[in-house]
Amino acid sequence: MSRPMLELRGLSVRTAHGLTLVDQVSLCVPKGGSTCIIGETGSGKSLVAQAVMGLLPHGLSGDGTITLAGRLARADDVLALRGLWHSSVSLIPQEPGSALDPLIRVANQLGRQPAHALAALAEVDLPADTARLYPFQLSGGMAQRVLVANARLTDASLIIADEPTKGLDPPRVKQVIALLRALRDAGKTLLVITHDLAVARGLADGGHVAVMKDAAIVESGPPEVVLREPRHAYTRAWLAADPANWPACETCLHADDLVLAAHDLTFGYRPGAPLFEGLHIHVRRGEVLAVTGPSGKGKSTLGNVLLGLQKPTRGEVSWAGCDPYLDLTGGRRLRRRYQKLHQDPTTVFTPYRTLGDQLDDVGPGSLQKPHRANLQPLLERLKLRPALLHRRIGEVSGGEAQRLALARLLLMNPSLIVADEPTSRLDPIVQREAMLLLRDLVMERGLALILISHHADLVKAVSDTVLDMATDSHECVSLASKRECAKRAHRPPVQQR
Image (cartoon, rainbow, N blue to C red):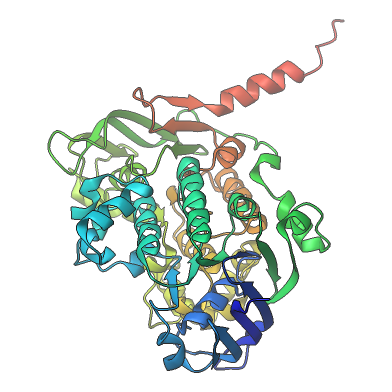
């Protein structure tokens, strides 16, 4: 029997105060195979990958042993682990924005001959001119695919992919799965951290699945066993939380209360090449408008234009009757009420201050620390432990960062939130809880929500209206009306007296 490519023995990760974030994880990844780690947001899945790379955030320490390609290292021996980069192990990180150098063009970051770089970009369905772009000119999905293309070019025998399909539309998800399979078939070993059931199933043949909850592995085995006949109650709940099984939400539209309107909206980075044009959008209080479409079609850019963060090439935007681009005074007055839940939540927090201090800054009237108890009900609804307020953004999981970013927005009592792929870092159970909470808040507070998402079942479950950026007409289709018609069709007939 050949040696495993990666073997973890008693791997633990702890904070400086002794809090255990990964607890005695032992895992064997066979050479030329694939292992998927799925499970709870905040359970330590990404920390396992960071520990193997010697990239644990400041303030965290590792314990146990890591054997990689036959070389044994202690989990706290950062220099030994980092010495294996490129030759033995390569990482596709969860946050593409922090992995790409903002000052270097894509082609130069791929680090090979131009022909090889172009071929790798083509394999992930990126056009040749992507090679000339800087990272800030890429959408989140495009940046993610650049990182996957880079893995195609590496010499490393072990590829660690942390949420490699995050923020991608379904066709691109299938493409990335196919590329990962091709890497495995070429002899590379894969360790994949994912919330995407499609990824776990797509790598099932000859693979392995480990399920993490509360910092430990609670179940592991062949995918055909774990994903079809799970033994642990958490695994069963995780699989049952697919958005296709969610109940359709009730609608509560305020027909005469426009929060945002846009007319003849057009935007392009280059003359004659618009990302979108001629859009007409109306969002009312209590409405959820979903914006869908393939990666790179301008969904995130549209959100920025609607929020006054990027000026349109043509057309106008109105916030409750005020044009934020023309009426600067009115725009500043309303600025706090029109907010964005970012695709990468780490960008809204500074890395050197505690999260609690940063939440204090944005509370109503600059929330004072003695009144931090006002946060408690919000933290409970978002299933966030108060202890997280004493950490910095680099010391929490991606899912915890997303929910903390949402807590930050809700403290500002917004009129409208643009949520850009808000569930891409959340496991299915927390994804369901977070989205249904957002929908409840829309109902309770009369918020307007613009949801940017690739997930068709999620969109169908929570949205009132859908704008599909893939169509030429760019028409907004009402799901609320369809749901109401469906309910009427199933209502019992009125009894005649």
